[in-house]
Image (cartoon, rainbow, N blue to C red; front, side, top):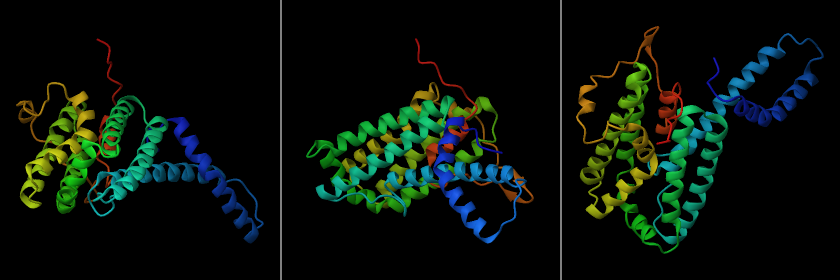
Length: 276
């Protein structure tokens, strides 16, 4: 079954692949003269599914690049020249995410991505302003973030595994569980920065600001009464276990992106009205 992507998104992805299809068919025709259209319909379905999977896989990779930690991320800069190159790459990837969200998301996931992209762009604009206070703070915390990279990446992967479980919970608990689980990422980052990487208080302030500039500000919009200092998370009860099929447990679809996993959880929900 195809993911619930907009028709325009699928068409846009197909256009990119049509040229490749024509090349493939031309090559095949050189080796075989046999006609018939019985396989064309099934081939088209396979191509659309492959296109959607490829597009989402690319976005997953982009999120891995902009995260700042892990072995696929864009390395944190240590000087102004590296920062200039870093900013160019980050803004290029943000534009890709923005385009993907506009064309391929709908309902609550689209609203979530809009807030996410807006927040990240604002944060990066302040960091990338030459000789700004934020740029200096960012560069001064680079050593801390590099030392903590492996630990941060493990925090990130653990959260994706836990978010994957939320997909199998009842709808009314999906958003609360998502909010409550995200708070565990903050704590994991704080522990890793202070205890593993021995980051200073100033460096940790920068790390926490970076966390705020990714998923947290977007999630805060949806979390309402499930705030970090609330006791409501404890009252939710345990999350469901991931079901098994033929003795094998379901695995997360995305390996690098918390945001794409959150979008999966939010997929059945409409936008939240912002009117007062």
